[in-house]
Amino acid sequence: IENEFSDKEYQREYTVSIYSCDFAWPHKKKCIEIDGNQHQRFDEIIERDKRKNKALKDDGWLLLRISWKEFYKDTKKWIEISNEFIGE
Image (cartoon, rainbow, N blue to C red; front, top):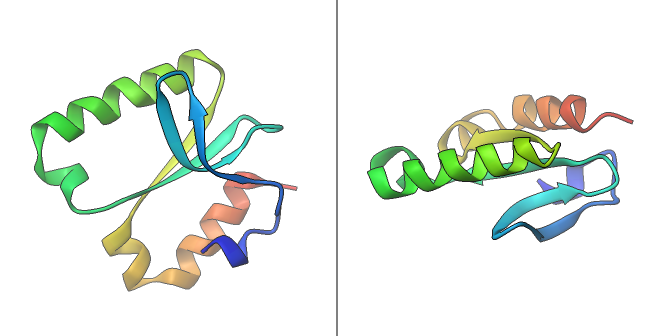
């Protein structure tokens, strides 16, 4: 996925507050999280993601979460959605 981003000015594992974003564009305050199956299966992880979402939003960030399973099923679609989210 990282080779497909139109805006190459991203950072991997970027820290915001106590959390880390998979892909972040600090200059745009946008990040993308690629979530494995555990993010839908385990209550502890689901709750942590809710806290992370709130912390990012409270700090002015926009977040796009993508299920790894869905990304794998239709990679082209999710790359397009990601690039639209990131913007120019």
